Amino acid sequence: MTITVKLDDIIEGMECQSDENHSYLDKRTGTVVSISDEEIQAAEDNEPIEDFPEWQQDLIKIAKEILQETSDCVGLPSKFDIDEYSIMERFCLSIDDPEISDTLYSLIKGSGVFRRFKDALYEYNLSDDWYKYRDKRLKEIAVEWCEANGIEFEEK
Image (cartoon, rainbow, N blue to C red; front, side, top):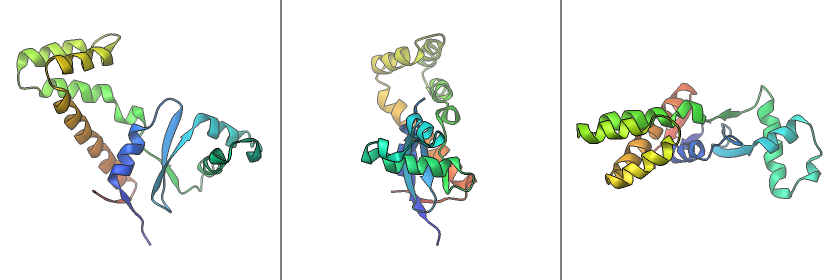
């Protein structure tokens, strides 16, 4: 029996990732789980599971499965696969008003990029447009990932 996953669950899992947390899809159940570096480390070190809080014990068991090459868990697109900076660049270039487009594009160079970009979005009243654009791109990435991994999905 093939599991059908909810595309929104994949997208939510992608958004929950950070340097310390990684999301995986369990292909047996269709659930997305977030595993921290701490849980991966505990699994790698084979630490006694009883030393961890009950809520974390299941995550460590899943982490152990992930570390096995035969695992049914597959990693979701990482923040590097998503590349939000590239999405920001394309959004800036998609703006019809050349002056605003140029201004936004120039703001995403150097350090402090994300803060300046967000401030400019509010200044130009483009926040809703940005989030729609970003959500659309995340959905495209999720669909591409599902197709590449042979995962059936449903929207809403």
